[in-house]
Image (cartoon, rainbow, N blue to C red; front, top):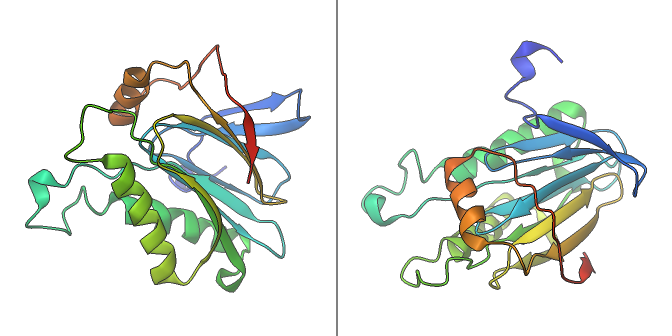
Length: 203
C-alpha cells in the first residue's frame, strides 16, 4: 500500500480467522477499513457507533468506528472540530469505497453501537448522540438503512462481511465497561477480551 493511502484505510491489525476461514481486519476507535475482497471487518463498541456500508451490487464495503464527543463545551458552535468528527469519519469511508469502485446509488448501510455503558451519566448520553447522528446522516445522504442494533446498556462485538452484507453481533455482558470507555476515549490499546458471553445475533 502506498504511503499516501495510510489514512485511507486505517486498520493495523489484520489476521486470519480459522473459524470463518477468512482474513479479518480489526478496527479500533477512530479507524475504518474498506475492501473489495471477501473478508471480515471486526470491532468492539461501547458508546461508539460503527457504520457498515457496502455497494449491494458488487460487494465492495467497509466499516468505521467513530465517537462523537460531548457537546457541552461546544453548544454554541455545532461546527467545532470535535463535532465534525462523525461526519469526517463517514466521508472518509464513503470516499474510499467510491475510490475502490463502489457506486453511491447502490449503497446500503447497517449501524451498530451507541450503548449507554456509562450508566451513571444520564445528562449527556454519548451513545444516543452517536446513534442519532448516524441515522440522521443516512437520511441526509439518502443512503438506505436496512438494519440496526443501537443503544441498550451492553458493549457489542461486531463482525461485518462486506461481500455479502452479513453482520454478526455479540453482546458483551461480562466486560468491564469502564475499560471500553477508557479505550474509546483515548483511542489507544487494542480492544481484546478473553471472555465473550451473550447470544450471537444476525443482522
